[in-house]
Length: 354
Ligand code: SAH
Image (tube, rainbow, N blue to C red):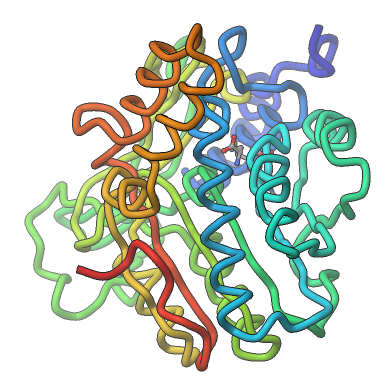
């Protein structure tokens, strides 16, 4: 039973709004759709719409916990220290990471940045000691921060500009029959396009994610002020490129993003190249952006899987297949990337070399 039941469908609200004031931007559409989507349900897991790495296996959170601990220990074990997770879902990653960290003496204050009340309730059960924040601004401004964001940036709304015969326009959304469609806006947007790109062929789409840029900018500022390190994990690309990457997932299947807004998870691929530039522009060290499979292997996922299988031989096959899902080339191993950031003076971080 979802909290959203009984509420007016978002599609109807959009129709009314657009009838009154004209087409809305794609960014507005995606932002409202995901705010509704996440506030009204737990989308994770077999019975939900999609599954994420920490829900596939405890090994994922454990290796992240080891990475963070290694950074903190090598940087001098400064206290107080904060674990800050953006969009923590069910809290599974935090639970697994912090269990391992504790074994090595790292017991940080836990901060969850989460807007969904439905997920907040679940996080409260998983980690009752955590503090909740609507955004990063209320996280304490002293003591190093260990920041983790898994499949968070991809949920933030993107803005799309399209080249038309009349110049660059923002992509707007309006109803057409039962669904919605994208149309070019009327406002000239040429000034928002880098000069080198302005002559692109008609139909070219440039996608940006102001929310992701702002999140990385803010995290980078915290790293500079307070010390610490950050991991951003998501599917995306490490070279800038054109085109729309907007997609929708419902019940583990790709569906039309322009049908039933608020009923499916809308995502876009993360532009890690731009985010690395933003972090570096603040003076933070970009440790690298590497494929998830490679990163997890370098952190020792094979050994961890073997150890788990020895303790629970009856689960050996399941452990092995979970490991394959996380690192396999056709699975999450290549499409998903891990971007590492660190404060000046902090160590280089395992998994980002070679
Ligand atoms: N990290 C978790 C969940 C990923 S789903 C995992 O790997 O399983 C995306 C998460 O980001 C959810 O917790 C969702 O509620 C949260 N989220 C989405 N948009 C947000 C926003 N604008 N601010 C804060 N959290 C947001």
